Length: 251
Ligand code: PEP
Image (cartoon, rainbow, N blue to C red; front, side, top):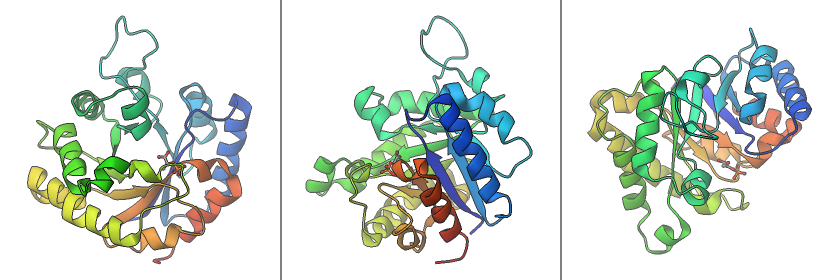
């Protein structure tokens, strides 16, 4: 396993100044942390100033979304050409994009292809809904999301997959290590290997869903988990740094 990965997804939060302040505090606190790869995903409008503020630091930047077309009449959208100069990563297929903005696997597949074409590393989010869970269909649902989102790709560059059960996002109810172990090994890893061969073994898998400084260690203890994707708790500077610190040593 390489460095642990901690992604902070700020979603649609923070004024411009608050975002800059938070990024610069995180940067100072992470200055001497080399064992954890911290990736921040602020809102689009704060990406450029935060990129400048983080220049030369060990923190990477991610966008929270991206359209797949390069340019044109797509009001309100941001293209890979615009993002590639600003950030190295992009979160794709987040459950809020899927549920609120009706993004389907086919659209996410186009976005993954476009990101890779332009050298932006996708953080592909997958996860079952509470209905899938109730019906015992979690593995089928997550497998289908991965297969359809990576359709036609035999080389995925530095893709990461974030397992984010929809019922665990922002609810305070996280998945148990047993569930994470089962889904990450029997579903995510095995699907990646069957689609991509040996290169599927090296793709980092993150867990996301109500991660806090108090529970992060149990997720990092899961065999296939290389890091965490943190939503709500990433807005709380002290808690986020605590999560980063706790991600340093093997759990
Ligand atoms: C997320 O936004 O991807 C997320 C996991 O949110 P939270 O940590 O708040 O559950």
